[in-house]
Image (cartoon, rainbow over all chains, first blue to last red; front, side):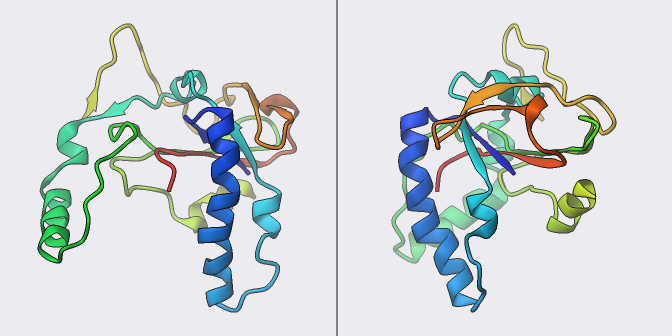
Length: 131
Length: 50
């Protein structure tokens, strides 16, 4: 697996162990799963701060309407009423997520551009692309 | 709906097309070139760091 980030290499190098310790390991431990980091350890995290690769895969910027639509604003309003702290985004909120699978013949077997910030393909779709 | 970036003509490659190749530095100090990666391989583009 290749994870491609807009962040600079030093920032990504600092983030990967943080992500592993605070998200990946607790996720598996809470579920009693063994070999918690096998897939993570096989994953390469690569830095693409110029966004050249991001653009080569057709990933542009989303619209404000999609990113801050009624559902999202309603969610923020609920959090505010609950007293939860609302963090101001420090990154580009209009950036899009994308998932692709490259087959043995170097051709794509999955191509998915996120409609909004929550849209990712199902795990089953990714696994189907890998076979 | 997507904002147009000036000077950019973006197109998402479709299933069946050859994946655009790239070479990028990895956090483990290596340099990753898609063309030489073991395949199949999943590519995930992050939109933020948690």
